[in-house]
Length: 177
Image (cartoon, rainbow, N blue to C red):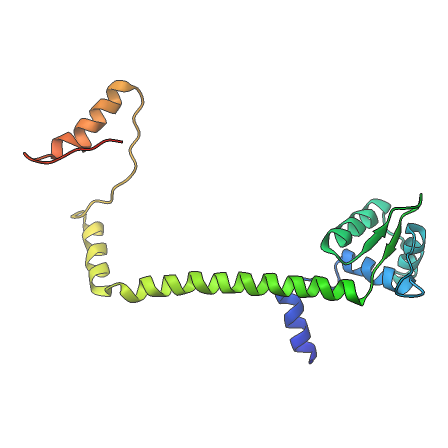
């Protein structure tokens, strides 16, 4: 896969590789001596300091990133000991990418469906009718209905009289629900 394709997939899946969370994921992977090994927070901090040229970063930001990585599925956390252990491997990362790809496909299909309905509406419109209606509205010959508000019982009754009863003809039916 070319770098351009790789970059476009990363953008579609909404992953930012230079984001602090991804840097910490890389730090966990570097710190592990094997795929089944768990690393503690101190080891992550030390590796992060090496990766970032001596800057360890704030503990709260690292914990926040670890929490996000766990929630996203990139990291497993071993809470059986006093010091938590953090682990990641290709399998976990693969699951996250597969899940994100399915979500992106579903979202894109939904957007396509919405666009198809917009296209159908636009195709069924007659541009001459729309143009003449717009001219009528602009010239004041055709009114646009706007919501009306009434406050108090007498104003409500007056609004009903003005908008409904005044426009009735003999034989018209009025139904309220």
